[in-house]
Image (cartoon, rainbow, N blue to C red):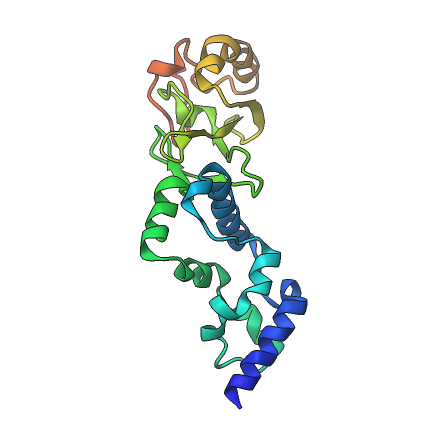
Length: 208
């Protein structure tokens, strides 16, 4: 009986779903984006998508995808991120992209991935300093109400500074950081006024 088979699978998922389903990094980021929006905008009634809640409510969002499942290992092939996305209304999918985007475009033109935290703390934007030359202020998401936390990186992608106030970094801290960067990367351009310098995606070395 197909219905009884699905019921048995759902029961197993409620008990052992964390092991049976593929809750990969993509799924965890999807969860963190929505859980962040729940904290930032409690009036908007975003769904509860913590792993424990999803396992309890698996029948509602997962049942339509279980008809061809015959072996436990086949559950690992389910694209949980895609399935959860389709469980949202079209309006919610659009709002999720608008309010909690997966990536932000920086002045260099690069699309940099944001790393969201499920507790609603500021998402992390890890980006090379040279790619944000010309950016005066810290980027904001959630309709301009939530600043990101910037992890500024060297040309070699090594951490240099963590800041939620880019304007203050440029005016106060950059000049100390610049001394070390010029020492470690002497062939790269380190301008006196980075807010007016064109951003660099690849490698732009200063003239010999």
